[in-house]
Image (cartoon, rainbow, N blue to C red; front, side):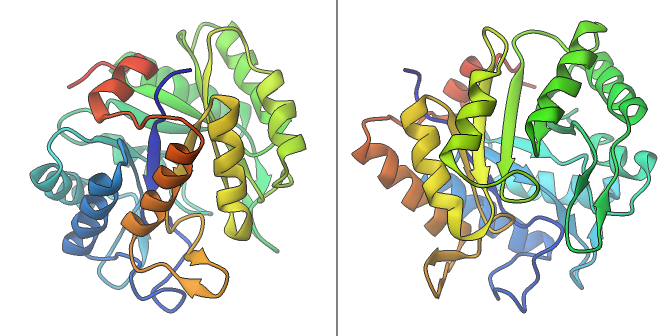
Length: 274
């Protein structure tokens, strides 16, 4: 079994300081949270960015500021800009996060439309997915195929069969949004993977560490962080993303998985270092 890659989703586009005061908005706060996660064992920083007032943005200038600040304190970490952005953003707006220097080595690619909240729909048509995949392929960016249910894996494979995704594929199964956050559902997705694919498991809220533990045992990788879960245990807010990563790393140690460094993660994922 390979070493475990821990990704830290440090802020997302939905959670706010009123939910947890440690959620980062400013460039300095983003760098602080990235460093705390990196020091605890995260090889990947999954990155959304905010304006100083907390408004989600895909503006490449803001991404550039945050990426540069992170690289100053974590020079070898893998930074994974989100192309999901926030509900309601246009395709062009969402892709602006990739217009930075150096060109991102690892980015997200959402593989379907889903019910993201009570009255929010996160729209990703097949045309959008193909256009995003084509751009990522042209720029040499490794896509992480974000799947919120099993059908999105099937859509990703349709895009793959059109030659727009390169082997080996890497998937991120996000449970607890549209797909139930159960080991049964995670197992069904993992059993549906194509040969040679790698995968990460994550879950929203109270099920975050249950799915993390299952992913570790099943040979997958793990994502934790404020985007997905604000609590270190029931009723206790996490003080930092580093605290969440440290808990995942301790679970991995108990279960016999070693933690991958950023360069080891690049080797596992077949990512070309910039």
